[in-house]
Length: 69
Image (cartoon, rainbow, N blue to C red; front, top):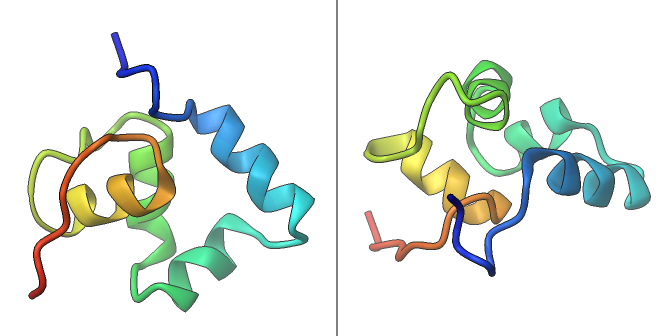
């Protein structure tokens, strides 16, 4: 079960679509590979550690804290 303030993958995709932005474009603009972001949104990566965690938190699919790296 996801925390109430976290977004579903579909909600994230809809928000990007409303802004006229693709998932790949968002990934590149934020320093991620498109593959990593698609893997987070599709549930292949849970976003527990490293770049996947950072992407999940920035996308809003996971509540969490980002530490400056």
